[in-house]
Image (tube, rainbow, N blue to C red):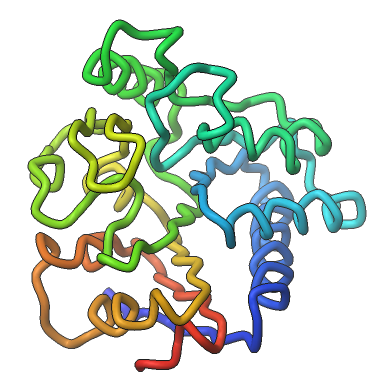
Length: 239
């Protein structure tokens, strides 16, 4: 396994443009090779900025978004029309605009009786419609080192399935669905998208030579071919 690559941009806007451009290049290359790439999206402020840049840059990219299969690394278990849903924001920012049609949202409270049933349903969807690996998994990073909805010390960290229901999240809302480490690690490339000085300590801990994924869950996800940390200057200030 190769060491993570770290790319630092001066500010969040430049970071978002760089990530969007890199993703479109990867997708175009995959499609040119005859593949329909699968990607996993994330939520959060920097992801929203990346999504807006994808909408802006896609028309000139050559990417056929109808041939991109879209998944999520995690989702808030709330109503389908809730503004808290990562999928709602991504659709508004770019998915609908670019013509993405193979979009697999995680279940909402309108679709499943509880968070565990929602996780079971999403696991079934991945087994039925997944490709066995993601081209790119994009992840944010919490100040506590969490990724997706895998929080420090939480039992979900040791789940060996595909998706897991998370209750008692330390960050609201309390119920979430998350892909597990096992599922997130089935990726050719894992990208961490991190902005802001409040994330700098967690970035340093995740990239340290030693550490336990139960304390810093970000340490538990790596790409099969590469792992890239896309940081702005402030997020990189402690490394």
